[in-house]
Length: 116
Length: 117
Image (cartoon, rainbow over all chains, first blue to last red; front, top):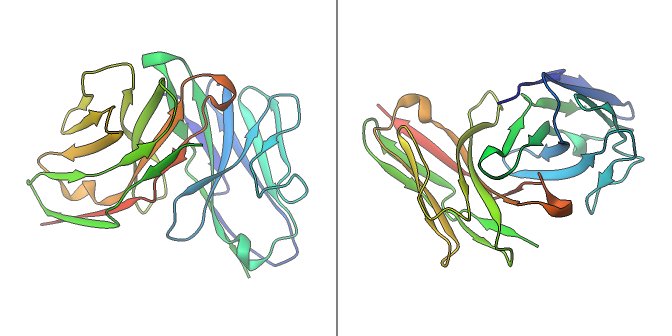
């Protein structure tokens, strides 16, 4: 399957600052997504990163807090803005492509964010 | 909306033995995919196995196999000949096939599996 390189792998940030996470896929993918995984919990979808247009956010997530870009079919960024300790989580990007038995859903390595 | 339930927060097994992780889901969709992912402490989400809902045959990948019961909406994972490297969090996940939700994964709560030597 495709490989997603995600960076940074971890960061410790001061409250009130912003962090931008980048994901680069080694080949074109149809869809890209951003998930959040709070400590000890499951993954929750933040948004769908749409190529060349505004991202589509899930309930409970807003663009001002989590601006997302996807300028082409292989790259996306997620910014966590005006951070607070509650934003401390693992953030993962994911890609999806193919249909039927060729459907692939794969992930970047994750970014462990700690806000102090 | 779809829901995925993993009722076993933690499981343990002895090395070389077999363990089964449970997953149930709820959906009104007829066409979908089901996945098991493994997440070791490194945080990387690793695809273990995938099942297409339109296929009656259960998927297998080496030591990993599933028991897919579409009518019961059940999708359990069997790990045979467990190895120490299988120690990880395991997530069951659901994806609609096509439409505006294509690619979106709904995850269960996860099961922590520990393999003991």
